[in-house]
Length: 482
Image (cartoon, rainbow, N blue to C red; front, top):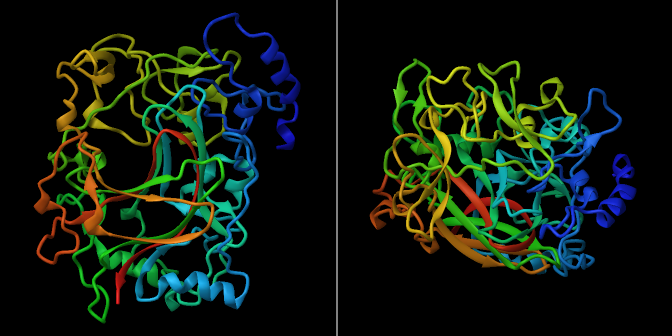
């Protein structure tokens, strides 16, 4: 936070000299300095860099939420043999999978990462979520294992440490956890999503550990067309003792100003937006995806207050794209992660129609590093479904999908968090759809049965609802009761 100290006087000036009675709440520049992607605000200019670029904190920052109460810490502790025995009694009678995510530093890294996690929220104006991709932060990103991308983990003290963990997990100290803070969210909240298909690096990895080996044993082609998207087939018997996993397990707690509710969700090939997308295969052919649910994309045509929507062309882009960029910044001169540039300077405007010259992309134009055939030749336009359901969507001649046909309505269960570390185990049978998207036949979601090969998990999501959120998750795995 040292480099952001220059913002404190500015915060006072802004608070006293707003734009009159506009009805909009001014967003504190000190908050934007800690989280440059605050919803409804463009990033601040770093005065120490020329040409002018956005200020990015060197390490993940966790601004205050709610009343900013001090965290009392967990009363469930692991600091003595007695305390560990008491806390770890929750694991009695439970078999945990070799596959697990402990968020500890990997290989020669000195910081932890939540591997292949991405955090999202509902874009409530003035709200934020933190952290973001570990590579976004100059200091933190340099200390990670560059072969693994994912959300920056948070360093903790007194985290779960049980002698009853599988021997394959090793004896690594528990100093890192997945930690997400943010708010206030007013629409639907958000989540932290993990793509399980990336957990297997391949059998030729020279440093593959037992957990990764089990991930490889669980892996199946999620769509069945040879694409790279993979998923975990939970019907497989991978343990020599014949035990089948019947649910998901993890430790979790919350901060004092956070809502207590946390949802755990799965996406599979019947609900996943990713698996329903049209994909260009390695041989050049095009696969239309699974086709069970229909994809849709909400878009945001207008820029945050104080930013301009004007075309810029990055070196790896075939044509200019209109982006939200604060005055004085040329994003094309920035040396930063492509995903960070996409987040700080998001596409805006309706975008050109096919054949328009010159062609300029808009809010529906996908980034060059993640092409999306389904939304080629679409524009960001308003669409009214019922009079009560109206918004901006990416579509061309074909209207966006109706709500009851849409992807994304995965299988969900809920837990209630306290400020103490608690062990949670949730059976697959406790998960069900919410009902806002395409309904999946019950026979297709039976991951604890042996005769349903379609029961493959593509993503695991920790989702939060409206309000403020500040939660920690650690030692994520599958489980079976002995």
